[in-house]
Length: 261
Length: 306
Image (cartoon, rainbow over all chains, first blue to last red; front, top):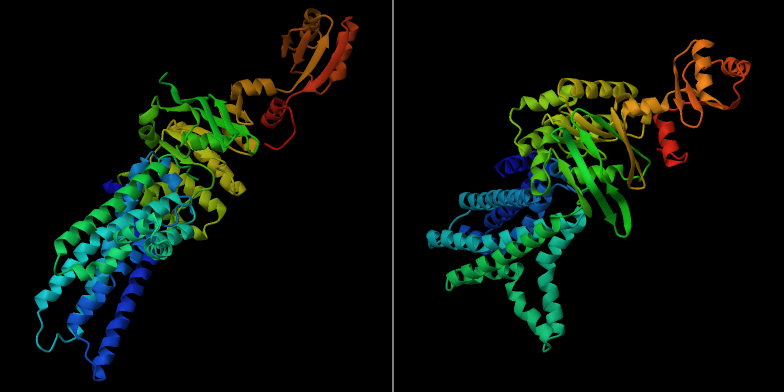
C-alpha cells in the first residue's frame, strides 16, 4: 500500500492540474484579502477576527467541492486513458487500487486544505488588524479549530463518495457532475421535493434526512461551535463515517469485478 | 507440470447472450513463443484480458505458474503484459510514466526505468510527454513497461501495430533476445501472420471464440511444406520409381495410395512420365504447400482477413 501511495503522490505532484487548482484557490483568497485591504484603505473596517471566523466558517461547504476536484486530480481520467489495466494486469489487488486512490485523494485534499486555510489565515493575520478592543485571539483560533475539526469527517465522507463516483462511472465528466450533484444539489432537491410532498410520508422523510446530509451539516457547523459542540462533532463523525463506509463498500464491491479496458 | 507456464481450462466469457470466448483450454509451456492466430473478433484480446485479470471469466479458470484462484493475482506479478493499445498518463513523460509504475509495483532501483527505455530504444525520448508520442513510440513504451519487472511470461496483443519496418525488425530481435537470454515465455497475437511466423514456436488458432487447434511451429512447417501430392493406383511401385528412376528419397507415402513428393517440384511432367513409363496410373497430381496464413484460412475454411 505504501508503494502505491508513493506512486500516486509522485504522479499528483507532477500534475499541472493540482498546482493549477492550488494556484486558483490561493489567487481567490488573495483577491479576498486584497478586498479587505481596499476596504481598510477607504475608511472601512475589515478585521482579522471576522475574516477568519465569519468567512472560513461560512465557507466550509467549499471544502466539499474541493474534495470533488481533488478526486478528479488524483483519479486522472484513468478510464479515458485506460491506465487501470496496467495496474490490474500486474496483479495489484483491486482493493489496493481503490483504497490507494482514496487515500491519495484524502492526502491531496488535506494538503490543499492546509495550503488554502493556512495561506488565508496567515495573510489575514499579517495584513489585517485585530478587533480594536483587542478581541480574544484565543477564541478565534478555538472557533477555527473546532470548525475544521467538525468539518473534517464530513469532507472525508464526501471524499469517499467522490472516489466511488470516479471508480464506478466511466466518463470522468459525468462522474464529476454526479459527485457535485450528490454533494451540492441533492440537499436542494430533497428540500424541494420534501416541501412539495410535505405531509406525505415520503416528503416528511426527505425533510427529516435533509439535515443529515454533509452539505447541510457543513453549512450548519458554525452554529454549533460554542454550545453543543461535542454532540455536533459526534454527529459529523457519524455522518461522515457512514458516507465513507457506505460509498467505499459500494465502490469496492462494484469495482471488484468491473471490466477494465 | 512445472513446465507449464500458463494454461486455461474451459475458459468462457459471455457478454450478454454472446459468447466472446467459448471453452478455451490452451497450454503455454516454458520457453515457448506462443502465437495466437485469429480473425478480428475471434476472441484473442478477450482471452488476453482474462489472462491479465482485466476481465473476469464467466466460466473456467486461468492457471499461471501453477497458481489459480486467489493465488493467481500474485502470480501475475511475474507477468508483463501489453493488451490492446498501450496506455499511459498523457501528462507525464515516458520516464515519469515508467517511474510511476516502478514505484507502484515496488520494483527496486531507479536504473530499471533507464534499462527498460534503453531496451526498447526510447532512451532519448524519456523526457517527452506521452501525449506527443507517435503510435510506434507508444508501442515501444508499452513494451518497456511490460519488460520492466523482468517477467517470466510476456503477454503481447498486436505488439507490432504502428511500428515502422525498422521497429518491426528491432522488435523481432528483442523478442529473440529475451527468449534466448532470459528464457522468457511469450504469448503473442498479431494480425501480421508473416511476422508471427518469424517468431512463434507454437500456435493456437482461435475462431469465433473457440480454440480450433494448437500446434508446434515444427508441425506447422511439416504440414505447410511445398510438395507434389499424387494419387496413384500403386503407391508401393510409385515409391520404387521415385527412388530408382528419379533418384530421390524426399517423399512420403500416405494412406489411400497417396504420396507427397518434395523433390522435382519444378518438373511435374518428368514425374508423370516416369510413372507412366513403368505402368503406374496417375489419378491426380497437384502442387500443395502453404504458409501460416494459408494454413489458418484452410483451417477456418474461408478467405477472410486474419
